[in-house]
Image (cartoon, rainbow, N blue to C red; front, side, top):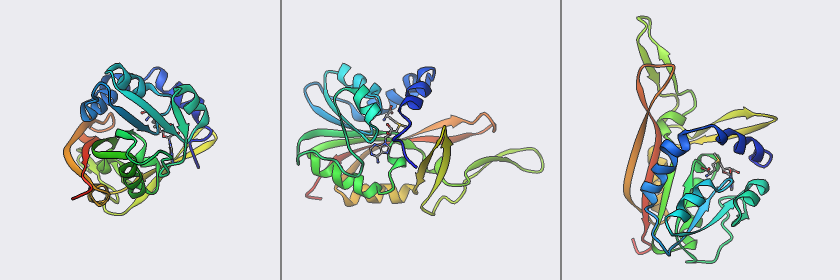
Amino acid sequence: MSWKGLGTWWVDELADDPSYDDVITPMLLDMLQPEPGLLYLDLGAGEGRVMRAVEAAGAGVVGLDLNEDLAGRAGASVVADLPQIPFREDSVDGVYALLVLEHVEDHGGVFASAAKVTREGGVFALVINHPYWSSPGSTPIQDEDGEDLWRPGAYFQPGYTDIPIRDQTVRFHHRSMGDLLNAAARAGWSLERLEEHAHHDRTASIDVPRLLACRWRLSREG
Ligand SMILES: C[S@@+](CC[C@H](N)C(=O)[O-])C[C@H]1O[C@@H](n2cnc3c(N)ncnc32)[C@H](O)[C@@H]1O
C-alpha cells in the first residue's frame, strides 16, 4: 500500500498529461509566490517537475520523497517518509506540498513537522484534491428525471479510498475542510489565502470543486 514501487508509473502518467502545465503547477506557484534567493522544501516532490518550476523563479529548492527512484530523478531530494522531515529547525523559508497530503495518514503531523523546519514568518503552500471531491462515495449521479447531480459521499467522516495502480494500491485519505484547516492552525499556520478550483466532470454536466489550494504563514506566537 504505497508509492514505493510506482516511480515509473508516475513519470509515465505525467508524460502526456497537460493538466500539470495548464492548471496544477500554476495553482501551486500562485499560492507559493516563490521569492528569488529564498529556500523552499518540496514535500513529496516526485520526480521534481515542480522543483524545476520554483527554481525557474530564482528560488532554491530541496525535495523530499518516499520513493527512492523519484527522489533520484529529482536530483536534490532526500528520501523520507512523511510526516518525518529530517531537516534542521528553521532551515527553510517555506514548504509546499502538491497532491501529496492526501497520501499521508497523519496530516496533522505533516503540519507540525513542517512548522519545525520552517523559519518564523515562512510560508506553507498546499494543493490537494478537494475534500468535497475526495470523500468516499463522492460521485456523479442522475436522478429519475435524468438530471445530473453530485452525491457528496461521507464528507464529515475521516476516511479513505484505495485505488489499484499496476500491482500496488494507492490510498487517498479524506478529511473535511474543517479537519484540514484546524490541523494547520494547531501547528501554528495562519491562513492567508484559500482557492477552490472547479472541475467540469465528464460524466456530469455540473461543476464540482476539484482542487483546493491554501497558503499559510507560520506564526508560532499565535
Ligand atoms: C501524486 S504524486 C505528486 C508528486 C509531486 N508533488 C508532483 O506534483 O509532481 C505523490 C508523491 O508523494 C509521494 N509520497 C506519498 N506518500 C509519501 C510519504 N509518506 N512521504 C513522502 N512522500 C510521499 C509519492 O512518492 C509521490 O512522489
